[in-house]
Length: 56
Image 1 (cartoon, helix red, strand yellow):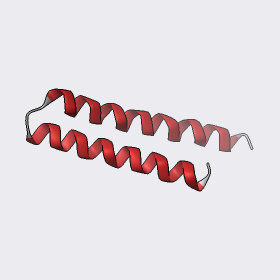
Image 2: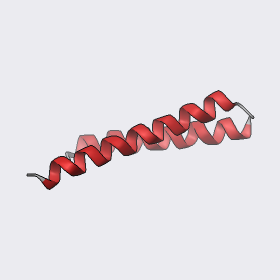
Image 3: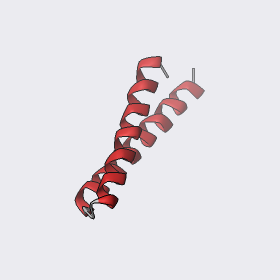
Image 4: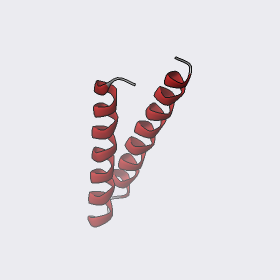
């Protein structure tokens, strides 16, 4: 996994956590779900990169 990919995944994860927290604080279910989706996507990308790295 390249450094750029790690930074992008971390940024997306943090953005997701912020959206989820804001959604919970404002009782906005859509924003909360969007944040959870962003976190899931970042985690899946990280897992995919880890699999690629394992086969190098």
